[in-house]
Image (cartoon, rainbow, N blue to C red):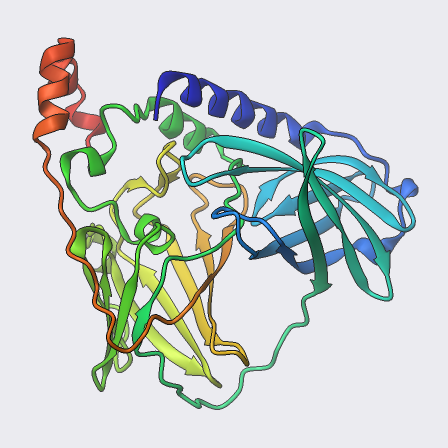
Length: 345
C-alpha cells in the first residue's frame, strides 16, 4: 500500500470519527427505519454481489447509521427515503465511496448505488429477525470453498486506544505478510483465497490457502484455562451446532491487525462466526469481532463463498521475504525497521 493510499485512508478514518458528532434530527424520519437489516449490494469488494449488516439507530435526538459496525455519512433520511455514503475498499485496498439511495416500501429498502455519478448497481435491505436456538442438526460443510465476496467496509468506530494502535502502525514496515508471517485468522478469513473444510469427528479442520495455515474447531470441549495468555495468530476455536448453523467462537488471538491498512486486534478480542448454507448451496459466514479495547462497537462482516468442483485442490502458497528485506536495504530503512521491534506483529 503506497503512501498516497495510506494518507487517503487516514483522511477517511478521521472523517469517520467526526461522524460521531454528525447531527441528523430524528424528527425528519419515521421509526420504520429503526432496527437491524441485512443489506445486499450488487457490487461489493470483488465487484460481485455481497451481503452486510445495516444498523439504523437513534439516541432520541439524532440518527446513527452503521454498515458492518462502522459509521456512515447520512445524506438524507425521511419518511420513505434513505441516502448515505458507504466507504469501502476494493481488491487493491484502495478506499472508495459509493452513495446508496433507497426507498422503504412494504418493509423492504431498495434502490441504487452510484460512485462519482456512475451507476454501481442495485441494493436492498431486509429486516433481520432474531431466530430461536434450534436443536443441533449438523450439515456437511466439507469441500473447498472459493474466495469470499463481501462489502468491504473501510471506516470503523475506534476507541482512543484503537486510534493510538492504528496511528502507530506502519504498513510498509509492520505488516507481517511482508515477512511471510501469518496474517492471522481474522485477516485470512476474508482474504481472496480458498479454504478447505474437513470433518474429523470431534473437530472440524480448516485448511487455508493463505499462508497454508491450519485451523481446528473443537466440538467437544471448552476453552483451556490458559486461553488468556495463548497469544496465537489463529487463536483457539470451539464450536457447536444451532440447527444447521455452525457457531464458532475464537479467543486467544495475538495482538495484530486484521487488514492491510492496520485496523487493530487486541489479545482480548472475541471472534464469533456463523457458518450456514442457503437453499442454493452457497456458504454464508457471518463474522462478529468484539474488541472493546479498540472499537466502540463490534466489527461485523457477512461473506459468501461458492463451493469448488470436487476435483479442485488448494493451490500451493509461495512467499519469499527476501524482496522485503532487500528493498529496505536499498532504501536505507533497515535501521528504522530494527528500531520498530516493539511494533512487530
